[in-house]
Length: 483
Image (cartoon, rainbow, N blue to C red):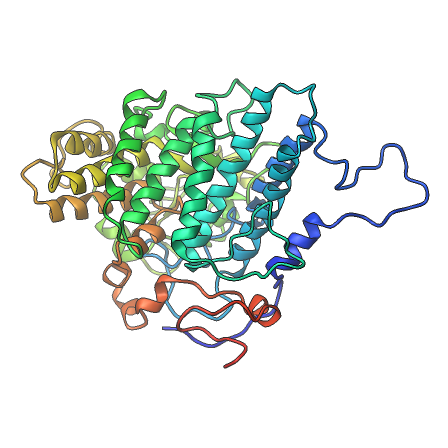
């Protein structure tokens, strides 16, 4: 259900974003020798790498976007949400992703024009292009899942004279796959020390597996892509250098930010900190604001196992329980508050938010393998049980038993999706799983069900873009300028 509430704060059209990045500076009679304009930028590897970092910075900053961006995501894990979306719901996501795309298109154009020149080896240029294509595919993957048909703007698009229209979902996925295939072919197996935040070819393969499994599910429902997803995830599991962190209590430890389990993340450092940990902390813990508590029904149903204590804050510093659900004592997320108490009370954290983990690859494989074979194979069962075993400290747990080949295809599929929720919550996966499996209205708490309908599976196209560009159309259930 939608409300036609308009909010014009911070609205920026995608054309404006592209122009801000792509339009040159005014010519001066005298140009300082060290002056850098769009015409002479991207002439060094350092400038291109800085732009790639800037593209990620468009998505993740201390108090902005995906560092503090759970606001628009109203899944069954987040406390106190509803499904009454305004016409401005999630506008910052649109702006952030198209802002990143604008930067990446400039990088790709510069590499195509060979602005680096003959002194830089072609192999190095290929790796830079692969990073840019990975990030562009990553951005469009978020856009197409949030908004459906979206404008495809590439390095070849004339945003001044061109007609910006919404392209069909299938065309957007064609671009995503093409970009990620370039990344897969040219990214390194691993990066040397000090470059751990960059995507590897295995991250590209895993992201491709996620793209394929999304295409196999709603809204495209092209089940042929399950095999593509299975094959990519299997390649990662069988041949990649990644593995699970053995102890579930150590998955999110700061020293494991670039462990063999973490394949790609939003990165923070001591010099460029993430949003202060108070957003994750409940009650009086380190002056906690408790902005993102866990949903009561979901957290209560979470299996009793070591993973629950490892991933959730259930007690404060004085061992006061947060299980009584009185409004102030509500379980919160532990994943991003593994700093010491002293550091947290100083309002600092440099925790990362993972975007691709090896656990994700295992669960993608299990889901796809089950669908390809018409039921769970031993390989599918083994993959998901690696995640369950770790969650249970490698002992049998009646409250969360391992899966078996005796399950039906539907039972196993539902169990894998549930396991994704238990393992990957607050890693920006749950909303997309509920959407692609079309189970949002089934899984949300009872109070939300009355406001849940098919229109909730897409977010609104920002009103300002619709106002400035009559070629764009609104998604069903939201307000348009013509209304």
